[in-house]
Image 1 (cartoon, helix red, strand yellow):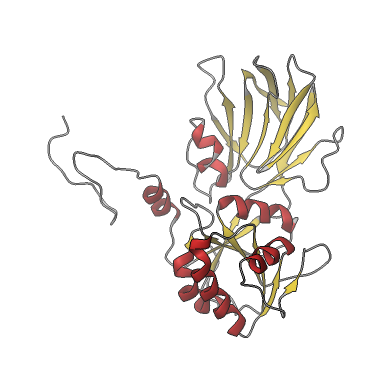
Image 2 (image 1 turned 30 degrees about the horizontal axis):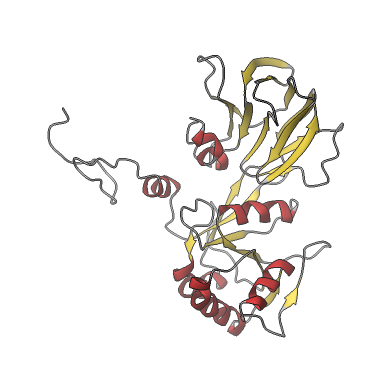
Length: 313
């Protein structure tokens, strides 16, 4: 993780919707930003949402990152889905992203909205750190998927409209790994290990780990368990089933593709830059948000260290 950064000169703000309960907090945050010595721009959808709630300003500029625009940081307002959407929007640009959480859980959007106005002045002065999060990229020449082929959380192939399983064969750098009979397969980054993969029984992977997870969805064979493999290299994946189409997902984006589907997955050239505040620790965040160590008989400590308590019978 990098040390303290230089002051921020320009910001791009992105979000999709604004709850009435958050209007006061948004007004405080926007007041801090508009009074700061920083250039502000807004995505069109967020600018529209602000204007609809009476929070717009005639001086607000709109930018969609379609050209060569570069900002010191992007602020997202919402949940982890908004951060994932922003990761795709950046298309590999090396711009750090700070997620301001207006939702609930939030592994990527970790700055709570009620705390944002108080924290932002320090962040603008450089009191933040940046984590490099690995992204995956799809190579699928037989499908028209557009230009945004990167994923921060996971790439998934799964059955579409039929109840029957599909067959997914996976090799790495030409070496066969496994053939899964299942509802689909998740290829997860460490960042995505706390998302869909975790819901399917996958392990939690520290974001500093240079690894990915192959996790079958509802596998027919009980011995098909999640496998952790090195991030480097190319995965060759072939999926087929009784239907003539499958679904391929990259984070929050879904695509209908013809079956059989043959494509490759490899690390993206550039990582995603996630802004973290000083003192934020991944393990502590996971322990707190997933309630690890919680025991109704003893409670659990939020201060770290060994749990104390009596007989464990």
